[in-house]
Structure formats: C-alpha cells, structure tokens
Length: 358
Length: 257
Image (tube, chains in turn cyan, orange):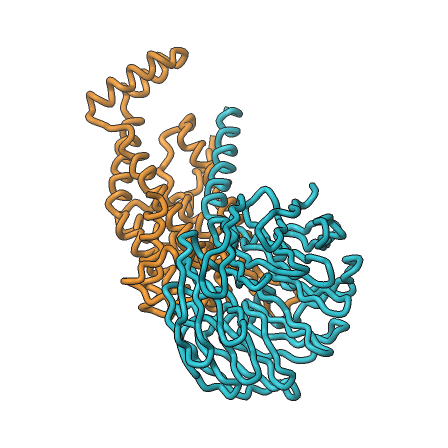
C-alpha cells in the first residue's frame, strides 16, 4: 500500500511538472538581452544578472548582483551616464550601480498602493539631473532623482516598453496604448498625445522638430514635436526597434525580415531588401560607412547605404537584440546561444566572444 | 502540428477577447466553450466509470479477485474475460480523459502565451495570430487587468488596511478543487475498496497541488482553474452525478451494544 501512496505522490509531482513545464506559467520572464556600450565597456543585462565586459578583449569586469535572485530578471539595456549604470528588473526595482565596480548605489522601488509591482521592461533615460524610467504593470513613466528618490510619475493607458526621449523641454513617451505622449519636464504636464493606431514598443528617434518611430501596426511614422503626423510609411511586418538616421535617410528592419531605407523629408521608400533570415527586432548600427543589422536566425548582415549586401556572418543562437558599435567594433548579444556576446570588426571578422563564467 | 493546435486555441481566445474587450471575461467564456465542446467526452467517461463501478459489485469479479490474488497474470486474464462477457471496455472511462489532456494543456498554453509580458513573448504571440480573423494592431496589447488582478501575474489582493496580500484565487481554487473532487467521487463499494483509497488520497493532495499552482502561476491560469472547477461541478450536477453525501456524510449509527 505504501508503494501505492508513493505512486500517487509521484503522479501528482509529475502532473505539476507537466502543467508548469508545458505552460511556462511561472513568473520568470523570458526575453532577449539588452546591451549598452560606454567608455570602453559593454554593459549587458540578461536573465538574472547585469554584467560589465571590456570592449577591448571581452573579459568580465563585474557582475551584479553577487547572488542571482530567483524571479528577479534583467533584460532592459542599461542606461549609462557619468559613472552611473541604471537598470531595472522585472520584479519592480530600478537599480543604480557604480559603473566601475558594479556596486549598488541605491535601489528604487515605486510605491504602489495596491496590486502587483511595476515591471521595468524598457530602458531608462538619464537626462540632466533625473532618470526617466518607463514601467509596465502600472504603466507609469517615473522621474527619479540621481539619488533614487521619486520626483514625479506620469501615467499612460498601457505598459511602456520604449525608452523615452527628450529634447530638454519635453519628454516623449511611446506607449503600448497606441499613443505617443509629449510631457513638459518643468511641470510634468501632458502637452499633447497622438494615437498612432497600434502599440508602440520602440523608442522614437528625435531630431530638432520631428520624431520617427515604428508601430506594431506595420508602419514607420513621422510626428512633429508639436504632435502632427507628417507622413506614414507602410511596411510588411511590425516594427520592434528604433530606426537609424543617417543624413536624410531612415534605416530600419521589421518582423517580416526586411530592411528599409526611407527618405525623412517625405516618407518615400528608397529601397528595401529582404534578408529572408527571420525577424529583425533590433535596431541597425552604422559602422565604417555601412549598416549592420542582426536577424532572428542568427545572421549579422552588413549592407551599404545604397542597399547592397556587403557581408554576412552566421552566429550560433538567435539575434533579437540589435548590434552596438563602438571603436569600430560590432557587438552582438545572443539569445539561446553558447556565448552571450560576440565582437566583430567592421569586415565581419570575429574578435572575441564572451560567455558568463559559471 | 502542436503549434497549429495551440495557434487555434490562441486565436479562439483572442477572437472572444476581440468581441468582449476584457481578457478575464474572455478566459471565462473560453473555458465554458471548451467544457461544452468536450461535454460528450465527459458523458462517455462517466458512463465508463459507472460500468466499472457496477463491475466491482459483481460477485464474479469479487470471486476472481480473491481466487487469483497471488497470480497477477491469471487475474488479468480472468478480468479480461469478464470484461468481454459483460461487454465492458475498461478504457472507456480513461480514454476520454486522455483525449482531454492535450486540450487542457493546449488551453493552459494558449492562456499563458496570450498573456505576453515581454517583447519576446509578444513577438511569439503575434506569430500565432491569424491576420484574417484578428486585427493585431487593434487588440495588442491585451488588457491584462480583470477586477483587482493583473492576469499575467500571480494574484495577491492588497487592501489598504492590511499589511499583507491575500491570494484570493489560490484559496478559491483550493476550495473548489476540493469540492469538485469530493462531489464527483463515486460512493465506496467496501472497506477494502482500493479505488476509494486512491480517490481519497487524490482528494487530499489535489486541492493543495492546484492551490499551489494557483499561488505561483499567472492569475489568468488560476482563473481558468477556478472557472473550470465550477463548470465541472455544474456539469456533473446536471448529469445527476454529484454525490452530495461525500460532502455531508451521514453520521454512523452509534452502537448500543
């Protein structure tokens, strides 16, 4: 009979494993890494850790936290300025770290009256003397002092995954609620909001008087800083990342796997190439007069500004995060690969790779 | 194949969401729909269970259990003979359950995939959506809020006057699982009825297991557990198979000897 009881317990444990395993229903978030390069260091946030890696040789400088906490995951690209690294986690805390040592200076956890904590999905913007951090769950943009105190918060109707941008007077927030918001920094009042017809998940690119941003409704849109839509450009797939602006041309990829070049003056398409290599969810980067894009199937592709394909480097793993370029090195963050980071020169030759030490 | 199966579930769920505009209500309606569609399987399962129950009361069955209790092979042969003689299919009660299993797992996955909370999860969700059926731009992101809950996260009701949260859904899932298992257990056929013993163990552990899952999983899934339990009880009640005596057992007469 004992054997029978034991069998029942085993059956129940297996059932729970089956349900849990099949559903992935736990609270651990699943996403791609976020990377930022600053002053010769690559900062990467992935799963339970934030790490600093030397740009020169790919060696580890520091990792945070000392001990990985279950359920606390980091995926937003860290914001770096004046020796401060700011990165939020999915459990609802924004961390300020010393850029040189990785030691925590302060944590900021938004005070929520009821319900679940806010989640930091998008990257923060360090602007002058404040940090502007978007959240999901409670859908606020938090303005936090450089010492970790909340200054104000601005609510939107849905999660904010996109890093905000600012021209010094206003901050522009692209929200999942389909609206682009302009908020005055001096009194944190809304100046205008514009419905762009679909969820906005990527940060806009801001010029003197125009914002360019993609939507999940398969469009690249130009909006004036006064809130008027200047033009719309239709794409085959949804747009998950910011465009790259080079002179008067925007370059960006979409989830259908194409790269586009669009004239910013009138929204006319200049060229389009289909990489046939899975979704392009990260921004492109400019290196040595050409552009590099990464695609889901693991291809790092260089194209000329005229749309010519220059070289392709195949990487083991998936590339959802866009490449970063610094000191003529191309850094890619890899999802589901043997390595977390790889560095290439401008011709696509591998320089180093990095996997977090066990 | 499995992806297409999950895709069908996700699109059905999102189609309901597109109609009602509330994800909590969509999960409830979706659960009802699934229970209605799988109702014939439930009826078949009940019939199979009833036949097996009757069989255990049969004298011939009890005789062979005693006679061949030390010869498992012979016992199996004799049982099979009896099944054939009485026209009982021993798989009739468990086959419908096995068929329902992928449906239940598919439903779990559909709910969880629809509750995407990160860019990668949302990207994967958009790939399952049929553009001819659903307007992706208008329905994404889904509004995960239902009553006090964020359906993508475990449920902890926080009240101003309490310093701690209350896992409301985990509690109601535990209670309804217990009620369901108690009400649906067939009456015991005897003191040495091993099936009843097994059922008793399941009745004891299952509510806690489900409660634990509801405590740790996204509340959208816990909502499904709760609604599914309630509908299950109603379904059995409509079929006249609810055993209220299990819930309120009559007191044993006190011996006066």
